[in-house]
Length: 84
Image: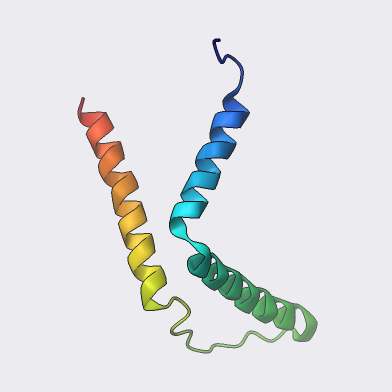
């Protein structure tokens, strides 16, 4: 059986595998970061005052390690594919 015109299936399965590899704690940290930025944006929209505060420690150590290794694996694969 030849799988033609099923790109949506391959893309969705690949996306789910990548999200599963990243892991649940990292995705929860992403949710917290997005909510943090949405709250500050909503506060800016309501008050029209731009707060200049120092943002620190949004990404925990586990998230940083996982993201660095994931992007480096993708980057190494891309470089390897471009070489040959």
